[in-house]
Length: 281
Image 1: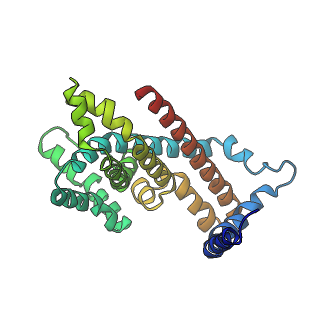
Image 2: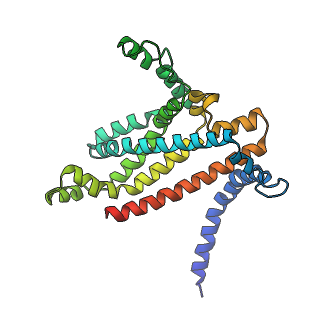
Image 3: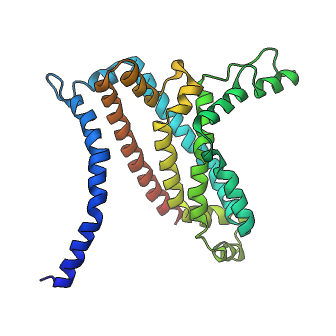
């Protein structure tokens, strides 16, 4: 039987965690339930409201576009973030702090301001087209704004700092002696990075990839300002259904699909991380 002291400790833990549980139930889960519950109340089959979403070609295009941009943003942020984070993690403390401040600076700027900056860069009279026209590479400006490309650029710029913060924190825990031991055994610096540093960084890569992917799926301001109505994503589609058309049930259908996509993506990334960990071990 449990001693009185053990029972008292359990009661203390329950008392300490109870306010957090009540807050989550009242602020997050209850409103979410009220939005999602009507989506199962259609006539006939309880998933009857979800079938039209996957049957409509227009909805499928939005879903595929959202997944494509989220996957590309996650891949590019990982490819750019791993070597950059490794470089930052191996600098002196003062330089590392300065580089980290530069890395997270975009997160300190309002998303609307960030998006307008990209509008000035990618617009027909923007920086990119002006440079290409002056260099004689183009005879007329390119249409870079309000495309999937502009959404992707804005998404990468938005979430790359999250990848860097996660990876730098993970790589800081890798001792220099481990890499030096690999070098002393005859491995090149590139081989030591891929055989030693990269496998040890997989937990940070996984966390960063999840943050970038989920953030890319749920981002609203950047896709709305850089993509316009012609390149709508699920987040902007939810806003249209709820605020413009007052179709809260339809918005709830899209919201649940986004939640399920997030859970599926997390499970896939965890499975890939475990397999890569076994192969690189």
